[in-house]
Structures are given as C-alpha cells and as structure tokens.
Length: 347
Image 1 (cartoon, one colour):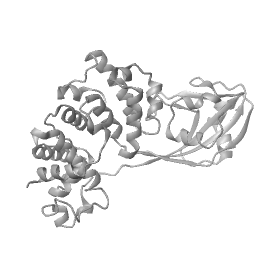
Image 2 (cartoon, helix red, strand yellow):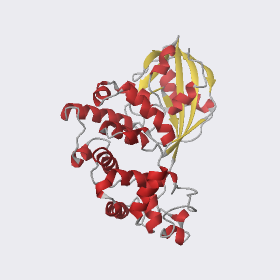
Image 3 (cartoon, helix red, strand yellow):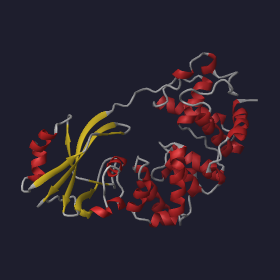
C-alpha cells in the first residue's frame, strides 16, 4: 500500500468529527478555512458556529456592518482575515449573484484567498483535483520524504506544491486533502509526534535517519520588535475617548488614544514628555491610576502596554470621539484592550 492510500486508510479510522467536514457548502468551508488560519481547531470552532448562526448565508455576511463582523471576530486576532472575509462576501453577492464561484482561477482571485485556501475550498466543496499545502502538509511531506529545502523560499514552496500534487488521489481529492491535513494535525505533530505507531514508519526518512525534530526547515526566524505603548483612558464625565483605527494590524478596531516610546519609560517621564503635552497642554487632568504592564505578543511584535485612567477637561482629539462608558463593550477591540476591560468596572 502506498503513502497516499495509507494516509486515507488512517484518516477513515482516526478522523475527528468536525462540523465543517459534514458539508459541501462552499460558504461554510470557506468560512472554516479562514477562521482556522493561524487558529487552533479548539479555539476556532465556537467562532465558526457563532458566525453561521449570525450569518447563515453569504448575503447575510455581506449585508452586516464591518463593526459587527469585527466584534464577532474579537479574540481571534489577525483581523485582516475578518475584513477580507467581509469584503469577499460583498464581492460574491455583487459579482457572482451570491453563488460561490466553482472555477479555481476565479476563487483564487477573491480577496483573502491564496493558493492553499483556493485548493481547500474547491476540493472540499467541489472535489476538484487541487492539492492543499499548509503547515501540516509541509511537515508530513518534509519528514516522510526527507525534504530539507526551506519551505518558506520560492524553491521550497514550488517543491512542496509539486510533490503534494503528485501524491494527490485526484478522484478522491477531498478525502485525500483532509487526510494529510488531519495526519499532520494529530499524528505528525510539530512537537512530540506519535512515531511509535505511525503507518509511515517503514519508509519515513525522518524516522529512519532520526531527524524528525530537524524537519521541516525554515529559512529565517521572524524578528520580533518590542513596542512600548501607553493607552490613555480619558474620562470626561461618564464618557471615554475612543477612535477607530485606520491602519495597521488592528485596522477597523477601536482603541484609546496612546503614546508610544522607543524604550520602557517611567510614569514621571511619560507625564513630562512632549507627547503628553500635546494632548493635555490646555487641560487640567488628574491621573487616577496606571495599570501594571500588559504583555501582548503578536507574530512580528511584542507589545508592552500600560493603561492610564485619567480624568480631564477640555481635551480635544480629532480622530477620537466621546463614547459612553457603559457602551464600550459594544465596540470591536483588540484582545489587548479586551484584557484591560476584564480588570476594570465599566458599568
């Protein structure tokens, strides 16, 4: 029995019962694939179910406000996924009469859908012969076939895609793709893979050469930038300044005004800074409290944040508006801000 058939045989006996596997509806499959990018199944499943309840069809998603979509996405991170999901739902309604396109090349042109997601949707929904290549697939192929080419280089991407396509069982593309992804997720795991009872053991090059821990190979590690932010929770009576972010990873989310420094800065230095003066120069303000440091780690940055509760009069901030303190939880915010909300009384 060859690799591909062994894989499918293993899958049929070991697969998890996941809600998006019980459908060929391309909308459901697309939604699940976007949610599961950068997100574990355990975390993503409640979001998937909540989205389908709130937006049962592509039309429902397209007609929703961006604020509502982002609020429902809150906590999942990588918010460009939600913005692209919303944009593409409107695109499908406006340009495809609300029907998800069945042509691979058209699917690939939709915003937020790359080679992997296009292959997943078209194979799972329409059983088209396109091989998926995600992190799980790369790990399995790298170990079983001993591929040491860095997977994040142009040469590596091409090599893994070609091998995946060669191994695909074209007449059962959906099952095969599900099989290899599931195998990578629960058997050939990144750490402590279950090699002792692996059906590929006899011919897995990584196992035979004792190099499981070294594969797959990545060319460069991401350089993480430290950022030092001081968020200003500015109160005027029972209202708080809040603004909608126009750029960056948190585009579309709401946040407090903030000051950013190159290094860790003591509270006295913050108050004496030019940045502070620009906001409070013509205002009388009282610092009520300063939170302890919140550490928030993203893919490319490590945020060191403190939240200042400040009572102030006569503050004017062009890009922010005064929001009732009682309604702050209605707005989509980052997980960092959400963590701060969990420490204070908002009612």
